Image (cartoon, rainbow, N blue to C red; front, side):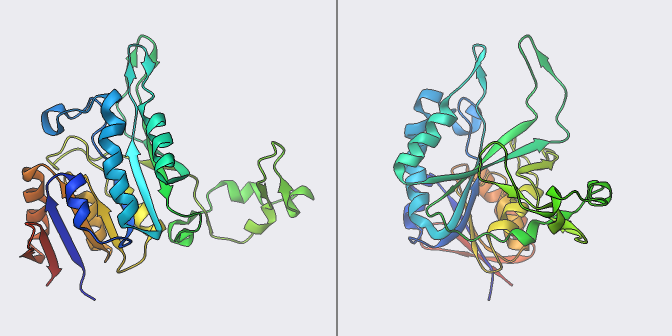
Length: 285
């Protein structure tokens, strides 16, 4: 099967309407945060953000497959000495819209510059909120397993009787563990904290994903020939990674400069076909 990349320049709220219902396996995106990217995206006020974003999330709910996942990279900032609540309010509004808020991942920026303000330290992490349409969704956990780590050589050397049985959580969470299950294993499942450095140089965009970030979620929630959508594609990192991993990709951005930049990145290895609504379908040559 040929891998396609569809690049659309325009407002996501309108461009998403032409994407078929239940056709996307994974949405991963980082929209403009409230009061940021004013020179490029106009800057959306925190008190206006929910009304601005809900038409987008409504369309994403329509185009996402019942088995699909939506990963939203977003972060509230501090205003007048306290954190803004617009992200929390957005989560609650999306739940009313029909989304399930199933998980939250933390992206720890390993190379964050140090800094200090009178009442806080510099942020070195961002949220990655996971939303789904159903409680049962595609998830390929084995694809993101990690080496066991040095802890295994000592922790698994001499097991107690408790380690050999399912030890129910003492805080009543319902979770439990059986340490003996990990004896003689080479890999373990990761945590929901992702330690990845930022990549802001040479991409002509002020807020760029590290390639490893979309790659990790694409591995976790899709397989080859699935479709990945980024409705705020920016420099196109998600599309390029998806294409390299043999996933179909759809990208939308309202900045013509970014659309052309992404097309130029794909152009050396692939052929562009202009579609009827002005987008580009890129077909593997």
